[in-house]
Length: 261
Figure 1 (cartoon, rainbow, N blue to C red):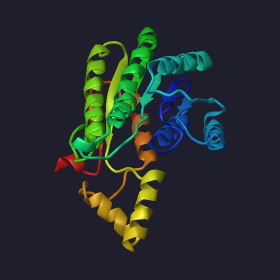
Figure 2 (cartoon, rainbow, N blue to C red):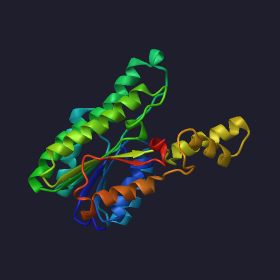
Figure 3 (spheres, rainbow, N blue to C red):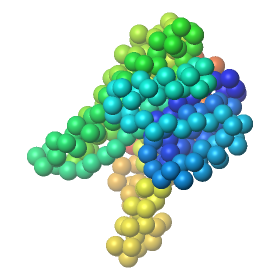
Figure 4 (tube, helix red, strand yellow):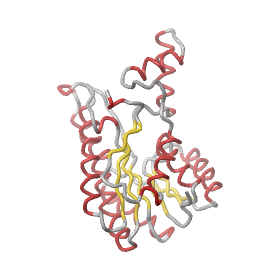
């Protein structure tokens, strides 16, 4: 699948799932705009790595996508730098775990702003130009928690359920505009953050990384295997292909059987 000539924006793409998606889109030939926070030198290293893949067509913008004005500026940056924005991947997100009665109000607001409102703002500002060009792909990274619940994750679960609802509305509105809108719902993904959590569990429990990995997966997934950022990236490339041009409004699980139970 070639995405040569297409321009992709991936929010929250300086590490983890977002970086895996950005890398896959660059490998498919797309120009890519990275977005997110982190160490400036590391971000530039990542940008350079992807630029080598994409022939130099990679930019970075530090917009805080929890803010509507910053999202508008980010979309305008894509259009200015590359002349279009064809593929929008709303990936940025944060998490906090606590029971409802002790869940901090400020963490609720922050999670809703970044995990849900940013998806709305991204679509709001990107869709008009996609409609004018009669082609666009919007991919919202939801979660297995967009389809089922877990204790202690009230804000995250609420936001990800909202992402799936927003995806369906956008898909209906864009059904005959040459634009598809889908949500990907990962289960456990082996990101550097998760690897660090597993290593910490192994050290605390005096067990092995392999044992703790299996235990973590077994809490939710019948399949004791992690999805990787690269596999989610490949999924995104497929959703941008002609083979997927009638797939829209879907919540697509890649979760090792999590919600099949």
